[in-house]
Length: 303
Image (cartoon, rainbow, N blue to C red; front, side):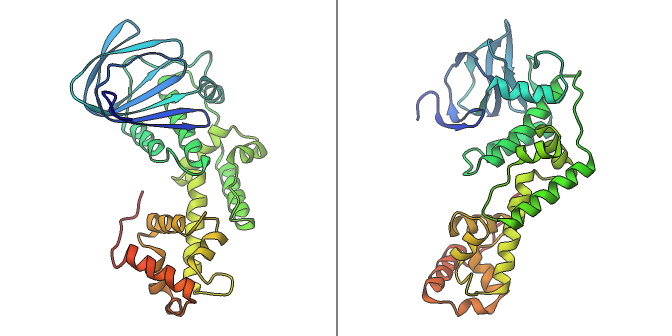
């Protein structure tokens, strides 16, 4: 969709809707039924909210609450921004887990901080993910940070280091028992007797990654070990490896190995085990395709 609103991409997810806009100059006027979280990445705008005038600039996060209205009065230049329309129940559930008394509220002038903006970027990066777990867990981290920073009366439950370690062992065991299954962290939190947001926050604090990232890393490392072993009756092609370790197809395997190790399966296979050159015809076609895609080039490992 392109107009004065710019190029807009809408994404629906469990718990809300996201809008990612590039080059927008539209003067928006909305009465909010969600908690609306907005980050301006480029440009500048003025808007009215709570009977006050604000300048909207990059570097801060602005939250409008349900039942309130805002109006954009001026846009300096076409801007780039991302908006999360979050269901009130999602914010309220997290607020209760954090021990916040009464309705959660946010300051009119926005909330700033490099860690908060970095977490918002992580949410934006997983919008449209094929699996719901990455977005759900990154949103849990973001909503927790927003509420803790905006509400000084929060009394959050803290998951112990032992509880986090038990969660990690459970995720590892579930993955090894069935690499094609997607572990449910909400169910795991219930089994451990801890709040979901507390578990995700504690896990991310102790291990510097979200639970879904642990599973993703394990999947990639086992695929790498499979390449090191060389072709076998069970895994004679990259598609076989992808299916064994829970990837939808060889393209998803390629993206994962590029992200974690900076190279395609074809590059890694040739370097880790010379037997990959003695593939059956179908496997050799895959290897040739990987050579064309990955060649000798190297890609930086994504954060």
